[in-house]
Image 1 (cartoon, rainbow, N blue to C red):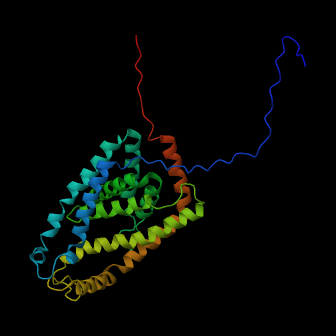
Image 2: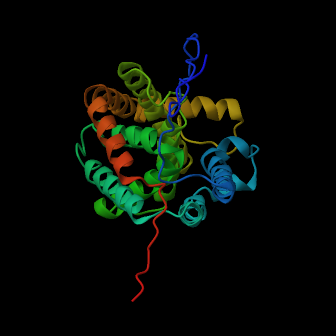
Image 3: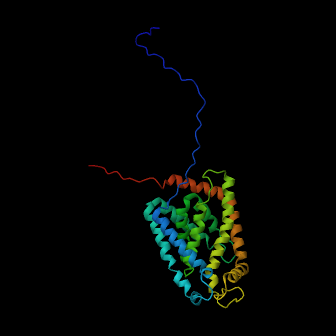
Amino acid sequence: MTRAPGRKAPAETPAPGPPRSRAPRTPRTPGAVQLGPRSLLTLALVSAVGVAAFGWPFLAPPGSQVGSHTQDAPWLFAGLLVLLVAVVAASIAESGLGPKAVAMLGVLAATGAALRPVGAGTAGIEPMFFLMVLSGRVLGPGFGFVLGNVTMFASALLTGGVGPWMPFQMLAMGWFTMGAGLLPVPARAPGRTEVGILAAYGFFAAFAYGTAMNMAGWPFMGALASNIAFDPHAGVPANLARFVAYCLATSLGWDLGRALVTVVLTLTLGPALLRGLRRATRRAAFEAQVTFEGHER
């Protein structure tokens, strides 16, 4: 067949085939602070020293010389503050934390510090914990660890709670907030599923935080309560029984109240706050590189 001059031959239409199936993309939750190799190394060092600082009563052998210096230990372990500042500085320097991420960190830390005095004197009313859970979940474990440290430091300055216990609070809150960012929950999981998992994490993590702080202060009771105080001459099973009795007698009600308040606030305010934090993080575009173009004259 001869085609007319000036006309193009019609393109052949491919035979229709089965539609291609695309693998669903798992969106990555944007994080303002990414943990690089140097930050991970510093964080591991801080955590190792922190575990020793919290759990030394169960690590020291009975009758050791460590037990005779229980009153000096808080000041020695206060050196953790230097390591905590180091991990924060390493995270910021290595990730290139920009001004928008610093602003987000400052706003969340100030909000958490302002929420901490709410309910002071009332057992368990500590709304700052649910904010830490949601912030760590949205902004990632690196941002969460830094946020927990800065929030506790700011709240200590705000409430006048500066003392040898402050490094323990900063480290415990850093672990608490970082754990929420490590939860294996897809970024776009069904809303109720994600909020339920965060509420369950907040419940158990609130008890873990209280237990860690109990362990930090329990060895320094002295002879005030001989039946539940730390005995440097007793073995691990005996001291463990004393510690459990100490937690039940002094902080069970407070820890339970903190856990329940965290669950209630997460279930009621969590969905809206998660959407707001994710929207603010997307608009801020923390990971976008900022470049400045010069104008030639």
